Image 1 (cartoon, helix red, strand yellow):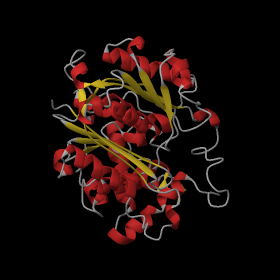
Image 2 (image 1 turned 180 degrees about the vertical axis):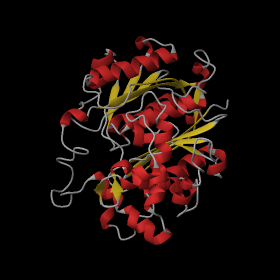
Image 3 (image 1 turned 90 degrees about the vertical axis):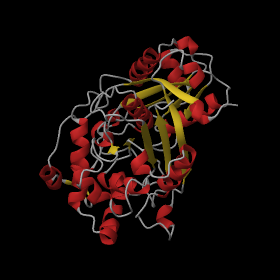
Image 4 (image 1 turned 135 degrees about the horizontal axis):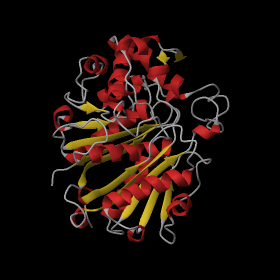
Length: 387
């Protein structure tokens, strides 16, 4: 039996994210998966198993969504669905299978095709109780955290705006991002309100996209490339769909992030995150979400997320480079694809070949993926290029 820390990523691929009206699900999966295989220098016939993250039934059912796209018939392929963590959960299960030595070479991928559905925001039809969920949207659910955080710690709208400015600065030079333009503090502050305190530029866009990763063990990875990256720590945690009824839920922290990070840090032997993690692809579906997440991940103390961002501590050259790719703010959030895209970004950063802004000298990177309306499930994966 191998160890999770023996698991290696040897190839990654991703489509451009955006309003990909000209591409279907098969098109995007084919582009992302074959790019990953080419990057890993393997052929489709070498894949022994696959995992695919998809949230919505209109995108695809079952593992056959992947096998039909890339013609990997007769091998086991599993469809994972776990809210916004669907793709990262596909990656987690693929890593566990390789660590168990059941398979030597597998693929983890994710895809979502949302823009064809029309309407505003994420499709929510059929989700939850018709009364409890009536009128509830992602911006309204996450936006509830801002007034609570503001009351407790003095967080301001300008603090939120600094998150958007930082991430758009990073994403402006990323060729695969949906939105490739910088924004000013004034533009963010004056943007039309979407829900409660959150304006248009506080929210990530609705996008289509796909991403993939080729996973094996380190002893095998050496045969394919020298700059492979390995798992340093991994943690996943699930809370409840009904946290609004939990008297202990105070909107000051995303509990699954706290718990998942604790597990990942324990496995990685990390005790001082801001000084031991070089970069993090952090779930920034909304600006307030990132502020709570950088606190919950231990990159700063509770309540200091806004000021720390404004001070530049999470810039590309800051203490921890948070969302050097531009994050969900610039890429959008095709649900099943997001978590694997984070693995794509962290892997390329650690190999010194980032698509956009490169964190110089990066040795340890994190993918943090949060799901559900207000923080129901979370995955944290820590990767390293240290051998």
